[in-house]
Length: 208
Image 1 (cartoon, rainbow, N blue to C red):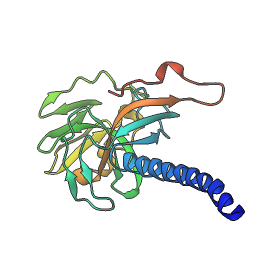
Image 2: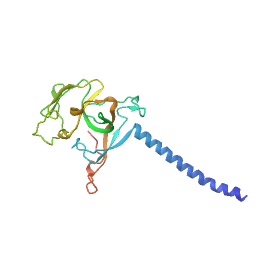
Image 3: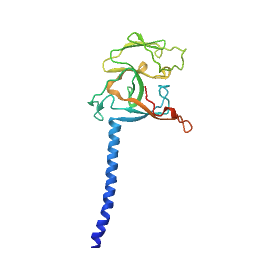
Image 4: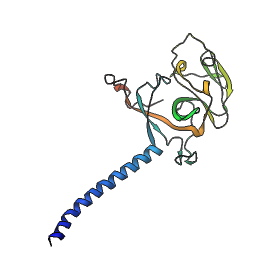
Protein backbone atom coordinates (compact mmCIF):
# COMPACT_ATOMS: atom_id res chain seq x y z
CA UNK A 1 0.00 0.00 0.00
CA UNK A 2 2.80 2.45 0.91
CA UNK A 3 4.66 1.55 -2.27
CA UNK A 4 1.58 2.26 -4.39
CA UNK A 5 1.06 5.62 -2.69
CA UNK A 6 4.70 6.56 -3.29
CA UNK A 7 4.37 5.80 -7.00
CA UNK A 8 1.26 7.98 -7.24
CA UNK A 9 3.05 10.87 -5.58
CA UNK A 10 6.13 10.70 -7.81
CA UNK A 11 4.30 10.24 -11.10
CA UNK A 12 3.23 13.92 -11.45
CA UNK A 13 6.84 15.02 -10.92
CA UNK A 14 8.04 12.81 -13.75
CA UNK A 15 5.24 14.10 -15.98
CA UNK A 16 6.20 17.75 -15.29
CA UNK A 17 9.85 17.03 -16.07
CA UNK A 18 8.83 15.37 -19.31
CA UNK A 19 6.66 18.35 -20.24
CA UNK A 20 9.56 20.74 -19.70
CA UNK A 21 11.82 18.51 -21.77
CA UNK A 22 9.33 18.31 -24.62
CA UNK A 23 8.77 22.08 -24.54
CA UNK A 24 12.53 22.67 -24.68
CA UNK A 25 12.90 20.22 -27.57
CA UNK A 26 10.11 21.92 -29.52
CA UNK A 27 11.67 25.34 -28.87
CA UNK A 28 15.07 24.13 -30.11
CA UNK A 29 13.55 22.63 -33.25
CA UNK A 30 11.62 25.83 -33.97
CA UNK A 31 14.74 27.93 -33.42
CA UNK A 32 16.70 25.69 -35.79
CA UNK A 33 13.97 25.86 -38.44
CA UNK A 34 13.74 29.65 -38.14
CA UNK A 35 17.52 30.01 -38.40
CA UNK A 36 17.68 27.64 -41.37
CA UNK A 37 14.74 28.90 -43.38
CA UNK A 38 13.50 32.29 -42.14
CA UNK A 39 15.94 34.69 -40.46
CA UNK A 40 19.52 34.60 -39.28
CA UNK A 41 21.66 37.01 -37.28
CA UNK A 42 24.87 38.45 -38.71
CA UNK A 43 27.53 40.81 -37.35
CA UNK A 44 29.29 43.47 -39.43
CA UNK A 45 33.09 43.05 -39.04
CA UNK A 46 34.42 45.57 -41.59
CA UNK A 47 33.91 49.11 -42.92
CA UNK A 48 33.02 48.13 -46.49
CA UNK A 49 29.34 49.14 -46.08
CA UNK A 50 29.79 52.42 -44.14
CA UNK A 51 27.58 54.50 -43.70
CA UNK A 52 24.75 52.05 -44.33
CA UNK A 53 26.25 49.50 -41.94
CA UNK A 54 28.86 50.17 -39.27
CA UNK A 55 31.36 47.88 -37.61
CA UNK A 56 29.54 46.47 -34.60
CA UNK A 57 26.10 46.47 -36.21
CA UNK A 58 24.20 43.24 -35.59
CA UNK A 59 21.52 42.58 -38.15
CA UNK A 60 18.76 40.16 -39.01
CA UNK A 61 18.65 38.86 -42.56
CA UNK A 62 15.72 37.22 -44.33
CA UNK A 63 16.63 33.81 -45.71
CA UNK A 64 13.07 33.43 -46.96
CA UNK A 65 13.29 36.41 -49.32
CA UNK A 66 15.26 34.64 -52.05
CA UNK A 67 13.90 31.14 -51.51
CA UNK A 68 14.35 28.10 -49.29
CA UNK A 69 16.97 25.47 -50.03
CA UNK A 70 17.24 21.89 -48.85
CA UNK A 71 19.98 22.10 -46.18
CA UNK A 72 23.53 21.45 -47.47
CA UNK A 73 22.36 21.58 -51.11
CA UNK A 74 21.68 24.19 -53.80
CA UNK A 75 18.23 22.73 -54.51
CA UNK A 76 15.34 25.12 -53.87
CA UNK A 77 12.14 24.01 -52.18
CA UNK A 78 10.77 27.53 -52.66
CA UNK A 79 12.48 29.87 -55.12
CA UNK A 80 11.41 33.26 -53.74
CA UNK A 81 12.17 36.60 -55.35
CA UNK A 82 15.15 37.34 -57.53
CA UNK A 83 17.68 39.80 -56.08
CA UNK A 84 16.98 43.34 -57.25
CA UNK A 85 19.23 46.33 -57.88
CA UNK A 86 19.91 48.04 -54.57
CA UNK A 87 19.34 44.97 -52.39
CA UNK A 88 21.89 44.45 -49.61
CA UNK A 89 22.68 40.75 -49.63
CA UNK A 90 24.64 38.19 -47.63
CA UNK A 91 26.44 35.64 -49.78
CA UNK A 92 29.23 33.10 -49.79
CA UNK A 93 32.50 34.77 -50.72
CA UNK A 94 33.46 33.29 -54.14
CA UNK A 95 37.10 32.74 -53.17
CA UNK A 96 36.20 31.09 -49.85
CA UNK A 97 32.59 29.82 -49.53
CA UNK A 98 33.04 29.29 -45.79
CA UNK A 99 33.12 33.09 -45.34
CA UNK A 100 30.02 35.29 -45.57
CA UNK A 101 30.22 38.70 -47.28
CA UNK A 102 27.68 41.51 -47.34
CA UNK A 103 27.43 43.94 -50.28
CA UNK A 104 24.89 45.78 -52.39
CA UNK A 105 23.61 44.48 -55.73
CA UNK A 106 24.37 47.00 -58.48
CA UNK A 107 24.22 44.74 -61.54
CA UNK A 108 21.74 42.05 -62.61
CA UNK A 109 22.27 39.37 -65.26
CA UNK A 110 22.64 41.11 -68.63
CA UNK A 111 23.55 44.53 -67.18
CA UNK A 112 26.66 46.28 -68.49
CA UNK A 113 28.63 47.68 -65.54
CA UNK A 114 31.34 50.31 -65.73
CA UNK A 115 33.06 52.64 -63.26
CA UNK A 116 34.59 55.86 -64.57
CA UNK A 117 36.39 58.18 -62.15
CA UNK A 118 34.39 56.68 -59.25
CA UNK A 119 31.02 57.14 -60.99
CA UNK A 120 29.05 53.93 -61.53
CA UNK A 121 27.45 53.47 -64.94
CA UNK A 122 24.85 50.80 -65.68
CA UNK A 123 23.91 50.11 -69.29
CA UNK A 124 25.64 53.34 -70.27
CA UNK A 125 23.73 55.53 -67.81
CA UNK A 126 25.17 57.12 -64.63
CA UNK A 127 23.62 55.66 -61.48
CA UNK A 128 22.56 57.95 -58.66
CA UNK A 129 23.56 56.40 -55.33
CA UNK A 130 22.70 58.45 -52.26
CA UNK A 131 24.04 55.77 -49.90
CA UNK A 132 27.69 55.65 -51.05
CA UNK A 133 30.74 57.07 -49.27
CA UNK A 134 34.20 57.97 -50.59
CA UNK A 135 37.08 57.97 -48.10
CA UNK A 136 39.45 59.30 -50.79
CA UNK A 137 37.28 61.46 -53.07
CA UNK A 138 40.22 63.08 -54.88
CA UNK A 139 42.33 59.96 -55.38
CA UNK A 140 41.75 57.90 -58.55
CA UNK A 141 43.09 54.34 -58.72
CA UNK A 142 42.84 51.73 -61.47
CA UNK A 143 40.26 48.95 -61.01
CA UNK A 144 38.82 50.59 -57.92
CA UNK A 145 37.83 53.86 -59.63
CA UNK A 146 38.04 52.94 -63.33
CA UNK A 147 36.65 49.54 -64.19
CA UNK A 148 34.99 47.74 -67.10
CA UNK A 149 32.77 47.78 -68.96
CA UNK A 150 31.73 44.19 -68.23
CA UNK A 151 28.48 42.36 -68.93
CA UNK A 152 27.01 40.43 -66.01
CA UNK A 153 26.59 36.77 -67.11
CA UNK A 154 23.35 34.77 -66.70
CA UNK A 155 22.81 33.60 -63.12
CA UNK A 156 25.37 36.09 -61.77
CA UNK A 157 25.29 39.44 -59.94
CA UNK A 158 27.66 42.38 -59.65
CA UNK A 159 27.99 43.67 -56.09
CA UNK A 160 29.79 46.61 -54.50
CA UNK A 161 30.30 47.97 -51.02
CA UNK A 162 28.77 51.34 -50.16
CA UNK A 163 32.14 52.51 -48.83
CA UNK A 164 33.57 52.50 -52.34
CA UNK A 165 37.17 53.35 -51.49
CA UNK A 166 37.38 50.64 -48.83
CA UNK A 167 35.58 47.64 -50.29
CA UNK A 168 36.85 44.45 -51.89
CA UNK A 169 33.97 43.54 -54.17
CA UNK A 170 33.08 42.44 -57.70
CA UNK A 171 35.56 44.93 -59.12
CA UNK A 172 38.35 42.78 -57.68
CA UNK A 173 37.10 39.18 -57.46
CA UNK A 174 34.25 38.92 -59.96
CA UNK A 175 30.57 38.04 -59.92
CA UNK A 176 28.34 36.40 -57.30
CA UNK A 177 26.38 33.32 -58.32
CA UNK A 178 22.67 33.17 -57.58
CA UNK A 179 23.21 29.92 -55.68
CA UNK A 180 25.76 31.62 -53.40
CA UNK A 181 23.28 34.23 -52.13
CA UNK A 182 22.16 33.31 -48.62
CA UNK A 183 19.87 36.11 -47.44
CA UNK A 184 18.65 39.67 -47.78
CA UNK A 185 19.71 42.12 -45.05
CA UNK A 186 16.62 43.29 -43.14
CA UNK A 187 16.98 45.21 -39.86
CA UNK A 188 19.62 46.18 -37.31
CA UNK A 189 18.71 44.72 -33.92
CA UNK A 190 21.83 45.79 -32.00
CA UNK A 191 24.70 48.20 -32.60
CA UNK A 192 27.67 49.17 -30.53
CA UNK A 193 31.27 50.21 -30.77
CA UNK A 194 32.02 49.03 -27.22
CA UNK A 195 30.49 49.02 -23.75
CA UNK A 196 30.45 52.81 -23.64
CA UNK A 197 29.23 53.23 -27.23
CA UNK A 198 25.77 51.73 -27.69
CA UNK A 199 24.17 53.25 -30.78
CA UNK A 200 20.57 53.40 -29.62
CA UNK A 201 19.38 55.35 -32.66
CA UNK A 202 20.34 52.48 -34.98
CA UNK A 203 18.32 49.79 -33.21
CA UNK A 204 15.46 48.53 -35.36
CA UNK A 205 16.63 50.45 -38.42
CA UNK A 206 15.52 49.04 -41.76
CA UNK A 207 18.45 48.32 -44.06
CA UNK A 208 17.98 50.03 -47.42
